Amino acid sequence: MRKFIGDRKFYRMVLAILIPIVIQNGITNFVSLLDNIMVGQVGTEQMSGVAIANQLVFVFNLCIFGAVSGAGIFGAQYYGSGDHKGVRDTLRFKLVVSLLLFLAGALVFLVGGEALISLFLQGESTGDSAGRTLQYGQTYLRIMLVGLLPFAILQSYSSTLRETGETLLPMKAGIVSVLVNLALNYVLIFGKFGFPAMGASGAAVATVVARYTECTIIVVWTHRNPKRNRFVQGLYRAFRIPVSLVVQITKKGLPLMLNETLWSVGVSILMQCYSVRGLAVVAGLNISNTISNLFSVVFMSMGSAVAIIIGQLLGAGKIEEAKETDTKLIFFSVAGSLIVAGVMALFAPIFPQIYNTTDEVRVLARNFIWVAAVCMPMNAFTNATYFTLRSGGKTLVTFFFDCGYVWLVNIPLAYCLSRFTEMPILPLYFICQFADIFKCVVGFVLVKKGVWAQKFVEG
Image (cartoon, rainbow, N blue to C red; front, side, top):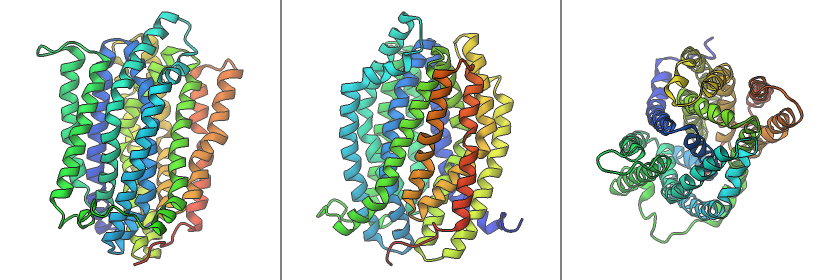
């Protein structure tokens, strides 16, 4: 067991990085849960419209995440080798690519938003209900467009801060952001203190304001502390990125960005496959996913910790230490997820009762939560192995490991079961989710072989 369990120094180091990320993500997801509950109080149709629109925004968010992560594997290694200029150049790359993605995302949502939302309503037989859901989803998405730019800038800066060891500031900014979001949700959704009751639109406005708040805090603090954040010195002075670095990041980062994009699109297609079983399934999955995201913050945040810790060790040339540390990190992630999954399963019958929806939706949500709890340790393992492979620059491998698996296994399975069988939604959902067990085997083999353990930056 000594191979899998570290000493006190190890866990102090891990927790110093992990806890701020968990707190930030946990608070964000908790407020998302409250946001979801508040919208759910005004009706199933508004809740479903928001859920579908957020599924589309989720694709954009993961495109940004993939772009900054592709450059981030260089940023972590540059910082580990003491090259602050390299970190600055990677931030510049993040900003340029994020801006381009913002323009592309805004165009897609403006032109094709209605058609995309309608894809999730094909299984609904009650036309009036589907029409209202479409209207709520469209209105929510249009308002959310205003928040895409600050999100892109925010991710560029905050990811760089984390790569350089500054995890507290993003956490603090995230706390302020979610408090602003929560307060405005209450005021705007229900129409308090003289404001009109805006329902789902109010939730969108609150989210946009919160994103601008968080982005402002991050950017202002970073530039006001140039001695602490040496990479920001001269960031916008002679805004040039070495061509060789652009080629390197593109070569390693493009598969990562495509992976996040295609993976998120794949998840949306899976949701669309489930949605052919009716609008109640969409609402039930919305409740389940919101709660599952809250409980999944530990193992999801562990992925970020793996990327930071292993990336810095590889950048410093400590290859064997990186391998030993990675084994302990993966074990820690899976062990923690077992505990969290048990707690989530116990509370599964309680959470759906909070929503103002039908009994059918509540039962579906409860069952979906149980499935998510069963699959959580498996997801924790695949998440940790994904970030391990990524930290060593094996982005082409991660492409096939992550999104390749979704498109070659999960999507065909879900499509065939949903279109060509009469299988009830619960066993259908369980089979599609548990299919990732084979992905665990692939991840284990790839990590065990150690092909990811390499330093690829100079310094």
